[in-house]
Image 1: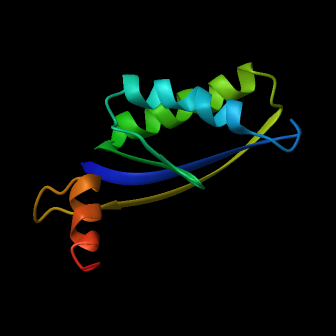
Image 2: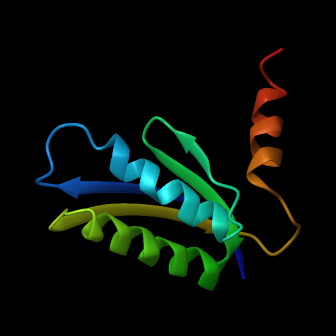
Amino acid sequence: MKITAELCVIPMGVGVSVSRYVAACEPILRQAGLNPQLHAYGTNVEGEWDDVFAAFKRCHQAIHDMGAVRVFTTVKLGSRNDRAQSNDDKIASARSYFD
């Protein structure tokens, strides 16, 4: 099943800035072929259910490996079975109303 998802990882006990931990997930998501799109409060991805969640697990492990004892993550996801639609398609659709 193809899904779109938003991942927000929050390593706990590592200080105020978490940018380097977030950045560690980017290559994991890219290597999984999930077309990550970073934004201010998370990262959007798209792919097959099992591939997405396997990559999320690898992100968690990478952050633990960097020294974070706890990782809090929120995930939002959606799927549709009536047609294929990428994250870029969704953004373009919304932006078409800006003019």
